[in-house]
Amino acid sequence: AQKVTQAQTEISVVEKEDVTLDCVYETRDTTYYLFWYKQPPSGELVFLIRRNSFDEQNEISGRYSWNFQKSTSSFNFTITASQVVDSAVYFCALADLYGQNFVFGPGTRLSVLP
Amino acid sequence: DAGITQSPRHKVTETGTPVTLRCHQTENHRYMYWYRQDPGHGLRLIHYSYGVKDTDKGEVSDGYSVSRSKTEDFLLTLESATSSQTSVYFCAISHPPTTGLSYEQYFGPGTRLTVT
Image (tube, rainbow over all chains, first blue to last red; front, side, top):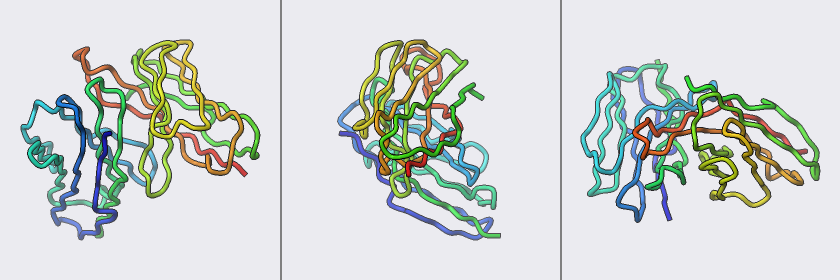
């Protein structure tokens, strides 16, 4: 069975600090897909990044970066120089090789204080 | 933005009554999903569809049924609503990863359902 663990339930940082959100996954598939989503206080779910299991390159997008390590089954998300607008719940998700059976982690609530 | 709408957006109903939630997409995505979101659980998959009339169960399918008679519509039915089904329900769409198209999910705005 697939599983996603986000051990940090809540994180609070002060603006401009860097913060890393952890995501550990379990799957028996050799082909799988990983995602991060953001849910701001308004409630919508916003796609941030996707990664397939064959692509272990880390990615940077502005202040956001992602570190995918198959050896430790982790797909961590770092926000550099956090801002108040980054305050949200962040979800890590895992999909099977058909891109169908999605499993979401419980989410990490990030609060960025001014 | 993917064109996904959900109706109704809010509903209050009584225990034992049937409820149907509708998800409508204008993006011609083959895959559609229904999730529920509850505090402490993140999003849990109820049912998904990989094509017209092709559906499968997710993690928390008990008490729910779905139907997909057209590509653009995916219906979620609670045959006899219970208080434990009070939740926020999200619909999502995606392409299969083998199509070469982007395969991430796009979500609708959600439906807040309260069963009293």
